[in-house]
Length: 249
Image (cartoon, rainbow, N blue to C red):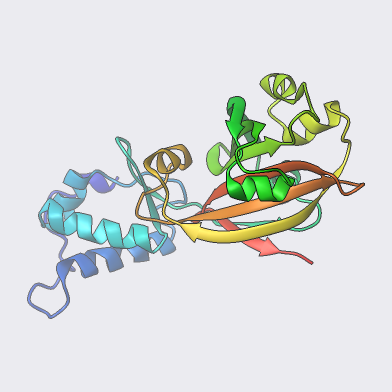
């Protein structure tokens, strides 16, 4: 284990014109790329790494922040720093199904319904569903996971009055596709997806287990039944360090 290092790292060059934190970042990056630290593995503590490189914690943190900004590490508050997992391709096309996409990449999908209820439709959601802003709509917040790691956080909105038991179904079954099927929509298609990026809120960063210093990918989408009627407007926030969105025609 790296924690066994108690003397300064001999490879660091003080006074050589290259900041110590940059040398530390380069050393750790080399170890990650060489496979010394596997994807998802937790790195040694700040104290252990500071002792290893013979630097103070401020210098060590600057190196760790650089690696996190470059997507090589992720930090979980109270747990430490972990090597970032492989980025998964996530195709966005006419038929977008989370579980199918994740299984196709030999990963295990899972989902949790975090909360359900009613909310006033925000302007973008109202536009997608063809409603006036502020109209009350049923919603469900769902956390999607791949191999047990948070992958996306979605808020799903449903047309008012059309699916009176949708929230009841979602309390029993965390699959949106299954809940829609139980509500009389056996199949549906993606009509439109808008993709942007922004910084996460503290809650989003905590739920997605990512740094607040890294952006998230934000998708606003409308799904319709095969007759062209809206069945769901969803706002999904993807952990940018784990998802690469692929737009399919």
